[in-house]
Image (cartoon, rainbow, N blue to C red; front, side, top):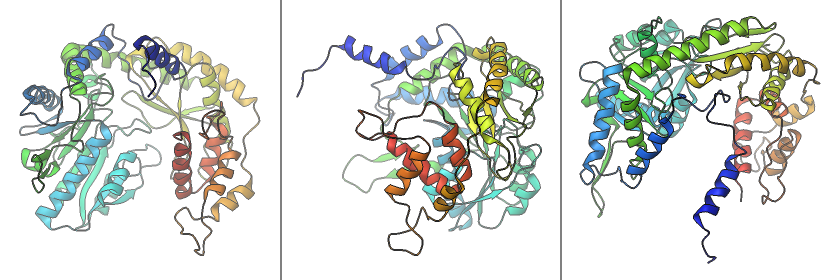
Length: 499
């Protein structure tokens, strides 16, 4: 075995690799990262993590401080978002919180109502994590269209979709794609009238909306105190500003939460009881979330919410002054999505590549805006997540947006060969070899990826090289059927993670 390398050399290599990534601080990456812009917060989180990095969160009887930290966090979340009797669990992120809420609803309905073929009812804007939960847990997802003008869930349509098989209905506060809050009270009330559980996905808004309310903004009720709301997820690594890997799922009472747990004593090892999907896990993320919440405090979070609201106001006013730009819905909590005239045809008409060229041009100027493609009649758009760190960046962003839009309009539109679409549509992503429909195999996948400019990267053992511009890739994806799009996305990611 080769000799180990000096620690300094290893850290230098990590810093070099990190240099190719989008920045996570400074307010120029408008997705994926949440920056409070507070001096010393990163250092506090790192120190707290380090103090608990080697503590195993699996067994709180061996490490009792783990229970103390988690109970403190859940107590804070329940005080902000709960109701009398609320209980909860610390999780690794919003996806795990949602998975656990769906499992709880499935198992509760099986135990209390005898439901063996479970269904959950989702607005079409519900997060993809619910579909992941459906796939993992054997729950059928019934998707209900949202209002095409406001992008909010249609409470009446959701109520009409509830049947005896329904174990859960979902509302968002807010939905990720457009940053709008669903009519939680109406949706949860309809679920309660039918004896069905209701989960509020407040992964983004849960640690922001209550503080926006305290800062004087109007926020509709969405918390556990709303009649019919039986569970709620909130991410502390979003507007709680903890490091990634910190979320909470709340339940109306301990009895409901019990359906989340997994326990097993039918093996010769130690008795297993897992509140979450994970078993063994570092308590570092729990400790840093605890430390960040304690340090910032309620007054601090109120001030940070006020800053986010101010940045949002300035951004929306600036976007309104750019010809051809249209903001989607009425964003109310830090998320903004906008489209361009000529790019928003619901059936593929119009120049989608103009919007995607704009995203590429902004990236060349040091900004990351997240492209979102057409779906269910909703127009393609660019998505921005605002944090306190963006407060002093809004004017610079808008100035570069003007310049980038001019540059994007001068570029040649990206088109997809109709023959390629016809060829791709002839393949069934799920077909078996020798079936009536041609199978989508490695050669076909490679041909489509090559069209999009996703060739092998030199010196990477065949791993795919990421293109400088994503517009050709995204225009192609937008033109494909959903099942084929999903297959290509999986193949694309697989081609990146290849040794």
